[in-house]
Amino acid sequence: MNRINQKNQELSQQKRKAFIAYITAGFPTAKATEQLVYTLEENGVDFIELGMPFSDPVADGPTIQAASCAALAAGMNMINFLNLVKTLRQKTQIPLIMMSYYNPIFKYGIKKFAVDAKLAGLDGVIVPDLPPEEAVELNQALNSQGIAQIFIISPVTEPARMQKIAKLSQGFIYYVPLTGVTGARTNLPKNIAQSVKAIKKCSQTPVFVGFGISTGEQVKQVVKISDGVIVGSGIIKVIEQYSQNEQMFKKVGQYIRSLSQMCC
Image (cartoon, rainbow, N blue to C red):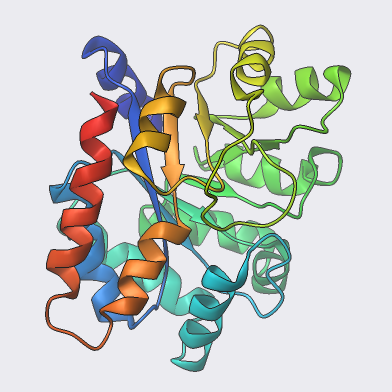
């Protein structure tokens, strides 16, 4: 069974909501990314999204854009990304999900990527700029290797299309509660509960909410109405702030712990 499904079963048995952390692979360095994964796991993270940096991250705000640029400049690419996953698998079995735009996967080769991702130990893939209508080839390749392809639903997704996406998404459904790019928000939309409820009518697959969430109060608010919460830009900001400081891992751990405690 895929690690994502195993973790979902475990969380359900424990009556606990999922806490998902996003970090950019290679930021500030590949070695630091490895240690950050262990730090995240130690402080209550259930799933980790590893961002594959890309030069044109259309869904990302300035925080993750800057991290992607720095990671690319430091040499992160698909080969190094998969090698990083292999290294992580020597020490951890936490579910690892790749967040990547389609271009790096397409350039690498769809079938080759699926095979190599499985060998590396990747559990899931999110491709924010690849709609399900155009994802058939990638979906088939990933399915053949037992890797989950996770799809995104937004506030402007029409009901019929929502049903289609909800049935296709594996592991979990990624609900983005706002229009626009990633980035911490002071306030979250008020209609999240209504939207999540509508999605859950379409599928038994867990619904995780991400984009804009960065505070403990926001995490607490979101897990009341969903199966899990995803935090990204808030973590990247802490990494950026302390990237030249030996306290970085400690500060990231403290921040994560303050959020993950709200998922109980």
